[in-house]
Length: 226
Image 1 (cartoon, rainbow, N blue to C red):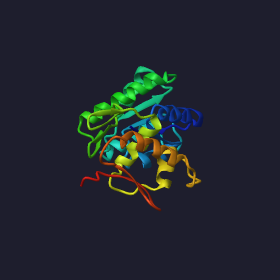
Image 2 (cartoon, one colour):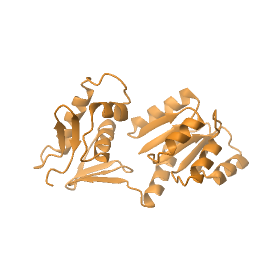
Image 3 (cartoon, helix red, strand yellow):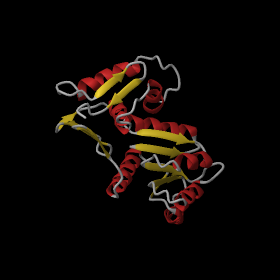
Image 4 (cartoon, rainbow, N blue to C red):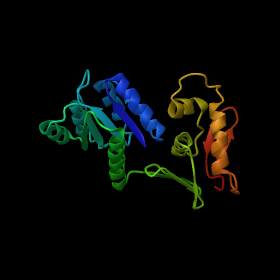
């Protein structure tokens, strides 16, 4: 699941990003309403988490602008303003859920996952398939030829990114920026280590390898039977 957190409190935003990534989700952040709106308009996110009180453009204005442009990405409003009137206003503006601060991360996670499932029920792609390999973004289940595979959160994120770009060369820089959030040192061996572990889980014991190294370019996941 890919999330966008629009929150101007740096400590709060960093905490949420770290917490969501630890459970295997991809989380980006924006520190003001204008930046958040620009990112959300791309439509690449499964759920948006939006604080109401933001610099440059407040959260409700961001949500209203998105709905005005027919962007239907589910929005969870996260705010210190928790009175009934505040919640009603947020939901009527276009929010799908509202959680008042302070909150428990376990509840926030459950609400976000529920919004993602609801979106999936409206026909959004939540399952990736390459050959007999299948990844479910919502349930975090991975299987090959009907056999369940156990992946660590980072391995799941790596596989999800590769399968999202199935048939395309994915560079080391792309992986560092999108899976590890590094913007430096493309020569680090962290990618090689995780690719090796992932390959042993999805290809070992199967006749047809799916994860390929493209020498001098990066990696590709594809159905070699085609």
